[in-house]
Picture 1 (cartoon, one colour):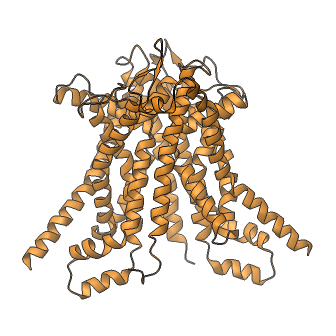
Picture 2 (cartoon, rainbow over the protein chains, first blue to last red):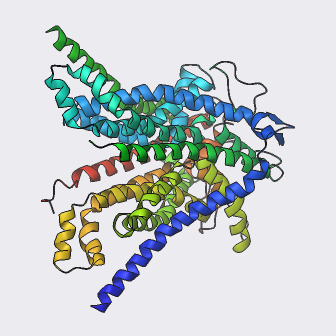
Length: 284
Length: 295
């Protein structure tokens, strides 16, 4: 009898240790980045362009570029994702069509980010001749986060109680009007918070924009969607690997990493907090 | 009648949009093949896959990606060895052992880990882990299989942990109650009832985690070292397929053999992850628990 409980305690200790190892790893990582990056952050760093072949100055063009790319990706992915989710949760009946669509979404979610980069290069940059620019990058990123948006939207639509739909349909309202007036408004907060996670993903990806949008350095800020841009993740990569002053620019690298992490995790954290708030508030 | 027609049209418009994921998947395949297939005019399929020499810029060039494939597999394998136990065990902790307040804080922490940009983790491996490894083990370089596997494991853990946790959580309460009623301890219930019942979900989690690791680019690009040779020890550098594509595409002349070879490497990579995902989908669909009567 005692042996059985000893085994239990030993097992619980092991699972506890593995969980805390993960928490510790992420905690240590964040502390390390903050401690090393904070000294590089200044008003100039956030608002000035790089100077002296990127060994000094700031990262403002990269912040702006990441903002453009992310905004573009969301504008492309959000309508497509919500409409796909509406079909999957409101119209489709169990059967081969829905099964194929679902496999398609899952496989799209699993496509390696570098393959998205190749695809963007082949289709947008070369075939459609957009060149390496904001538009190509935003389209590539938009397709990359589409499965995230579909998943989040579907979950939010399914969380709307069936009785809402039945009440509406029972009053003689058509299905389309029920969706637009009843289901969608109730699901919208959930859809948007889920989509915020997609924003974080789009802002942090590097491989898809390497050949489709990102530039090592641009002398001036982009003036149209057909201009190349600098982007935060690509800036980190370039500074850390391709410079002749890698050691010298370490503080700049830590600073850029801190800004990127703060941006992505900040956005994710907002989504997580809103979501838990919505879940607590809902009582249907 | 008019209203019915309108409803029908709207339904098909939504269906058309829902098919876009498949459409994009198709476009990806088409464009990878258009740009990748011309390489097989230069080398045979067998030479390309199993060739041991990757010297795309030499004269004459050699396009054999076997060392790159091995590189991809080896970092995926080692990162799985770290990530699977860590991910599954912490999922068991969150789902079955942890008190409620830890459960509620731990899930967001795991989600945050999933949200960290890969370039940031790659940077961490490069700037912090690599010098430490180099000094501690007295190596020529800290950019090697061990380093890359460790960082990749950090990326795979959130996927494995959160999907496993969902699977464990959805095991019906009656199973546990029946087990406790027979006098089993909590450990025995977890090991002999809950985990077996959730096994298909955990398997899916593991496969998707591995797919995440094999598709991840920035980490292996920055941390794996970049030597295109079959490694002999775990402290050797490797050049996985993803890293090779990302590093060389910028320099490969437009529509040269090198450019086509990189696209063909992309096809191989895509096929591998596609295969992983199909298996994951099959496992989760085939062994899905339907109600509580299926065990």
